Amino acid sequence: MKKEQPIGVFDSGLGGLTVVKSLIEQMPDEDIIYFGDTARVPYGSRSSETIQTYACQDVEFLLQYQVKAVVIACNTADSMARTLIEERYDLPVVGVVGPAAQKAVAQTANGKIGVIGTKATVNSGAYEKAVKAIDPFMRVFSRACPLLVPLVENGRFQRNDKVVRIILDEYLEPLHRENIDTLVLGCTHYPLLKEAVQACLPDVNIISSGEASTDTLRELLTRHNLLNDTKERGEHRYFVSDDAATFTENAEIFLGRSLDGAVQCITL
Image (cartoon, rainbow, N blue to C red; front, side, top):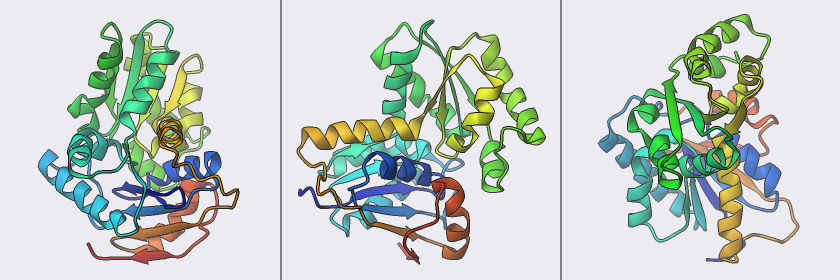
């Protein structure tokens, strides 16, 4: 592995771009290869066997570009397939579940942690397992929020949006009643809702899994002497498995900036 090799990032669609946004902000020297499996989105409603197959195919695609590390920028794929990917491929792998769990345990004061995510992520119990592995005395309260991804992808995530507020209130009220003091946004779409969520839970620590994974990746690359320190702005390439035009149109929402390169549509 060499420092100059790119970081590979994959997701089932657009949400992983919030992880790319964090990577660009925190590690601007790094080259990034992003793959969004838009032909098969969403992963959250698939079986674990199917998700594992898709995730390994995504990694195989990224390996064509000699990536030095892979970020699983999808909570569902991380919870279902990370162990298999680590066993099968000889390179550093960072997910979003473990880093967010570590950050949540570090920040909670009362030991009550909430998690919101897709049905598949919540049903997997991945966050509860990750938190309990760090501290078995922590209590984790999870809530599946199936309406949030469609809202975000339709541009409905502002804190003053009445529809967003009504839906968030319904999803978050049970967690609020449990007196959580820390909440993990367990889906990479959800960072766009962070301000709206914070407005509903003003006294709760809100943790973005994407930001936490970036911190973990930086530490990992530094430890292996793979952090790119050329002081030159990294190049970013984007690939999808379907409909590059729609991806390009919506990418700015997730990146908070326009794409700095063309999106290529490929067939796995």
